[in-house]
Image 1 (cartoon, rainbow, N blue to C red):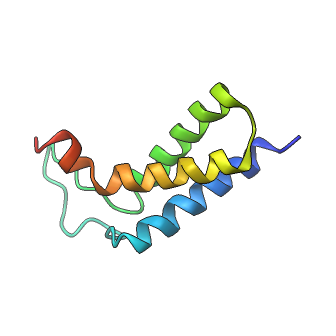
Image 2 (cartoon, rainbow, N blue to C red; image 1 turned 60 degrees about the vertical axis):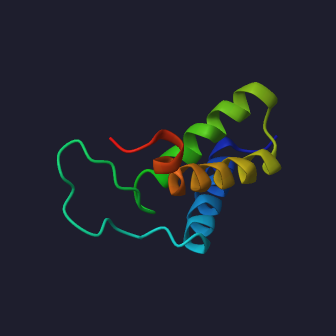
Amino acid sequence: MINIVFLYLISLITSIVVALFLKVPILPKKKPIRFSFETSIIFPTPILALGIEAILRNLFGNYIYLAFIAGLFGALLSKYAHKLFGEV
């Protein structure tokens, strides 16, 4: 049986690496304005990947390839959140 912490680490590392390839900024460019949502590699990319991994693990089981998919989706969702949900 695969350890759950190992799956979380795989999705976390995958999301950070994919976000680097997608050129997501490491830190926000400026101090956040109230009610603004500026994505970066630090936040929300890993949190999205961990949440998606937890959902996929509960739905389909403990599989390594699902952890990779969760990391990929977390990075993509973080990169294109403004296009998917619009501006605030």
